[in-house]
Length: 293
Image (spheres, rainbow, N blue to C red):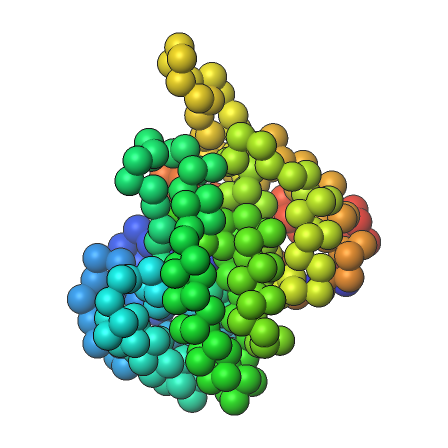
C-alpha cells in the first residue's frame, strides 16, 4: 500500500495564507502538507508561523505535516555561524514537534556551488566540489541534530537536490553513513537527479537509497535542445507530462518496500492550484492501477 499523498507548499505559494493552504489541501483530498521551515519573502515571527500552521491543521484535520527548506546552512566557513545555524534549527525542531504531529522532515545542509563552474552545470557543483571540510561540517552539525531528532521521535531526510552536498543518492547515503544515526536518511527527488547529464536509472537510485529511504518527492521534467553549443534544457511540467515514467518509478519504489509519504510538487509557473488537482488525480489513478490504494 502507498503512503499518504502530501501537497508540497509550492502549489500554494501565490499569496495564499497558511489557513488557506490547509483548507485547499483538505478540500482537494491531500493527507497533509510539506511546509517550508520558514516562508521565503515573508517577515514573520517563527513561533507565530508555527502557531498558524498548527491552527490550520487543527481546523482541517490534516494528518501529515512536514517541513522542508531552507534548513541549517552548514556550508558557512565560520564555526560560530554554523553553530548558530544548528542552534536555530534545533529550536525550530523542538517548537514544531511541540505543536504538530511530526514524523519525518525534509532536510538540507546548505547550498554548495563551484564558483569556477557555470550555473546549471549541476555535475560540477554540490558533492562534486565538496571539500573534506564541507563533509566534516555537515556531519558534525547533523550528528547533534540527529540526537535531537531521536529525542523527539523524528527522522530527517536529506533531499537529493542540485547544488547541495546531498545532490545525488550516493553522496546523500554517504552523508548518512558518516553521521551514523538511524534518525537521518534520504528524501529521494528523482526529478532533481534526472537533471544531471549522466544520472543513474530510477531503479538504481532506489536501490542506492536502500533502507535509508525515508521520504519521496514526485515531479517531472522534459528535456529540450538548448542553443547551439549549449547543454540541453530541462523544462518543468506536470507530473503526467514529462519524460520520467512515474508509473514505472512507483512500481519500483513499492517493490523496494517503501510505504512512506509521497510528496507531490509543482515547480512551475501558472495556476498551481489547478496543477495540484491534476497531479493528485493522476497519482491516484496510478496507485489504483498498481493496486496500491
